[in-house]
Image (cartoon, rainbow, N blue to C red):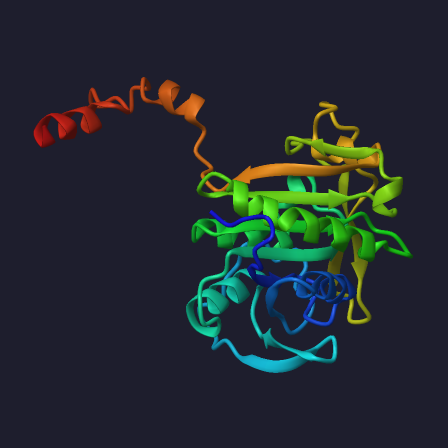
Length: 275
């Protein structure tokens, strides 16, 4: 177990690109006390989800970060960056992976699309402590205070240990941390946005579409991440990589799939043979 005052080996990534302000501010805050390796996309990769690159080569180029440090700009996705860093670029396994600070919140169903969240999830799949960090969109984002908060809680996360396959999704309201309502440990919201597609015609009379949404959901549960953020709380959500619905698992095992087979019978027979 790592003590709260022990310097950490941290991998820092994002989906906004290696030169994004949120990443650079967080790097400065973390590098004061920890060893920080930056491996991030060479351009913005927002909303790419957990995609990885299989049919093209990945290129990693060393670039300056905050003037005095060196990072790796990778041609792939945030998940690619984490894989490549752990397997090839870092000389030892990181104690902690932090993805962010993302420009724009990642709450509710957006966790399914977010490259920021995918990077933290990738690390958790490797059994590494991880956090995805985002801030509500603001013309004047308060990255410095958010970065100080992340730097303060990072040793605690490593020392106390999240369960295997779990990471933290942290979202800041678009204001300095000392002006926030507090910290709320929240669940992920499942409310859908009011989405639409705007149909247009191009100069060659072809049809194309712009996707958008009218507003954020109203949130049916006040303990949800989006509701906490709307009320100016810092939202902290533990997210699990295992997507199994264990309640439904027991129900579906009782289903009749035809020919006399139920969902649990083959497993039971195999267990009898193994026993």
